Length: 476
Image (tube, rainbow, N blue to C red; front, side, top):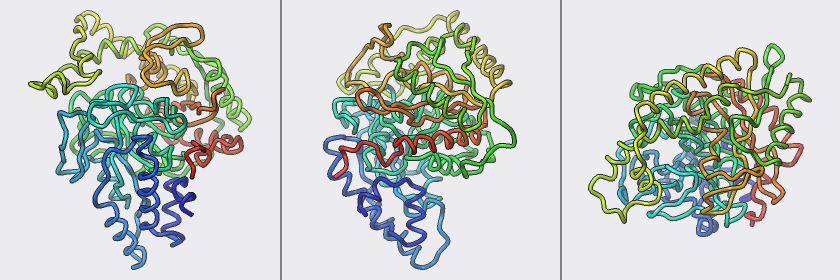
């Protein structure tokens, strides 16, 4: 039963609680035991919520009393340690914020709790949520459950590793350029960066700038992502960027009224991609075609004209340096890790280049608008390679040598444009590592994204790629 619990998705756990098949106390104990056994090797969890067991007992009492139960009643969830949690430390992966305990929950955390979820723990991240690996001076490096010599990604790498290893069924991460979708791809779980403005960023560093930042759910199944999004979306009256009132049905797999049109691409305009990743994207496209979706290979000329990663870098240095300078003011250099030092040392973007980058964002947005006037969704890769070894700074991908930032080539366009994207496993590398694909939809079309992902998940289940098969050597 314990094994069934820690590898079930959140939706299944909630069902088991409502039908009294298992109690919230048992579910909480199973995950805490799992953390105790595995976390010393993985280092995904940095802080346990001291009220978790007490909250589980209260949830069990509510079940026995016949009270009305929320959709996540009694289900544990974890939260990236850049997201504020009332009474539980939020240290942002930096000695500068060691011991920081917020008074209030971030909006996203409060909404998970309102649905009945129980905060289990905080998960590791890079310093200030700012790199593609989860390592910092305060809580150290997180390892990938599939191979401890590899990274689970960043910046939500602790969250992805915890879910992949069965230490958490569902959680919250943040995404600036890759950070929800990339870690999901490196550990074989599912995650979604929704349309910008759908989910408030209130209670998450940095307060400004926020135009490329997102908070999003990470879990074991498409239905979990759909459920979490239905709970998290909507303005909160504090985050001015969050003004979208989304009408979203958490149900999945409901057929649209007409045949869907989907394009697939791996470039050009997204950087080099390993052939086995290309093959996985093609397989997903073929699977959709077999499911009755109209699918064809496409290109987006705007991405070829303006390389999104270059555009992002020119804008973001100028935007984020003030936030880093404010956070690190007066601190000793020994308190800063790699990316804070790197960000503070980067030269400012010239005004001419900054303005050109601003205009490039508009050109890329227009390019996607043109694309989505003909298609309902886009299938592409998340990462150009499977999970890589710790500390690698450059890669040879399809014969081309690139630096580590190129891993963001297919994810950062969605941050620049605010488009929704869901990452889900659909393949396996020659080394036995998961390969995810990305389902991209038009603005506020999360229902379409979820529907297409559910079709692909049904195929991946037949192929033996469901979350129950993740990280098999981590099973007892």
